[in-house]
Structures are given as structure tokens and as C-alpha cells.
Figure 1 (cartoon, rainbow, N blue to C red):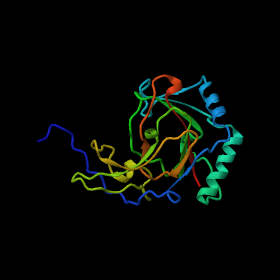
Figure 2 (cartoon, rainbow, N blue to C red):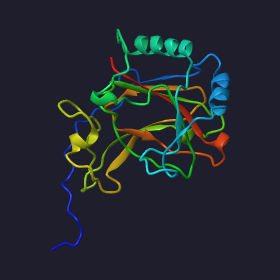
Figure 3 (cartoon, one colour):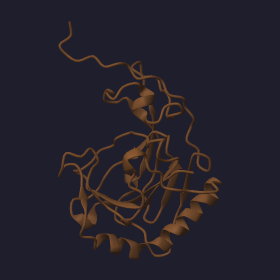
Figure 4 (cartoon, helix red, strand yellow):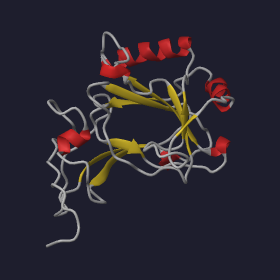
Length: 225
């Protein structure tokens, strides 16, 4: 008898190669004045703290809002043009739960690691990030992943209905180290928008910096459509 807990094997996911213009979209120089947005974010004094300051699973620190109303309205219009969506909204679940839409996140090199996941299909269809630190190197962008099977073969990368999140789709919360392989990496670039379908397995590729102003800073967004 094993002394270690046995967890169910991951269910296989469907796979579709992430393709720019269909599954994700990149727009460089998306904000007309990114330096002003960055200055506002650096000047914030009310932050919510995650790992390692608190026991939260999410890393670093975050605050809302990242963009002002006019900037956010322009971004919404751009997302509609790119995706063909006729309407976007921020979904709210029963009990008032919602994702941290229009949120600035600041995460240092010692505060987070790659964590493949999908966003909840109950709460969003599209997600996006705008990179807001010009000093962060290109490898610290965003990666898309696919399953790595125990035999070394590669599996899928999509959560599809009736499943609503990755845990539901896999049939387990516990996955072994190396259970996902990086498939596509979008490099970090200051003032770059990366918009993607939220049911793709994804993660920040890496975090950066020790001092507050040097850390990886990004504005994140979650839309239902």
C-alpha cells in the first residue's frame, strides 16, 4: 500500500493550436499615453496583497482601476473590432463574485512562477493583458500551454462546455509537476495588448524585478461577450 495520496489522472483536453487572429490578438502601442497610465499606477497607495505577503494563491499586489473610463471605453471598442463581438460586459456570479477586471497587477521575480490555468467560462469569454513596464525583458510575456501526458506525449489545451474551468475539465485539482508543456509564448513588450480566448490554458511566462518600480506590471481585463 502506498503511503502517498493517490490522485485521479488528468482527463485529456481537446487541442487547437493557438493561432493569432483567431485565438489571440496582439496590438502594439495600444495606449496613446502609456507613460501616464504607468505613472498613475505607480502612484497608487491602496493595494490588495497576494502571495507571499498573504495566504492568497495569486501573486504580488493588485489595485483597481488600471485605466480611466475614456481609456477603457477605447479598449472595449478595439476588442469588439478584433473579435467581432457586438457587446462586451463584466459578468457577475451569484453572490457578487466577479473577476478583477481593469486591474493593475505588480509581481516581482520572487513572488510568482508559471501557473498554467484558464479563466472561468462562467465569468468571461475573452481576457487581455497590457504590459506596463518598459524595463521588463521579452521572455516575461504570456505563454499558452498544452497537456504533457505521463508517457511524454502532448495533449490538449482547451476547456470546453459543459466544463467551466480547468479543474472541472481535468477532473482533478492535483496535477504532477511538468503536467503542461509551453506551446506558444508571446514576448513582453511595453504598451503591448495581448487579447486571448479565456478557455485557452495560459500563464504569465515569468515575473521580473525586486524593487517596486522594477517589477512586472500589467493591466488585466476579463470580458463576457
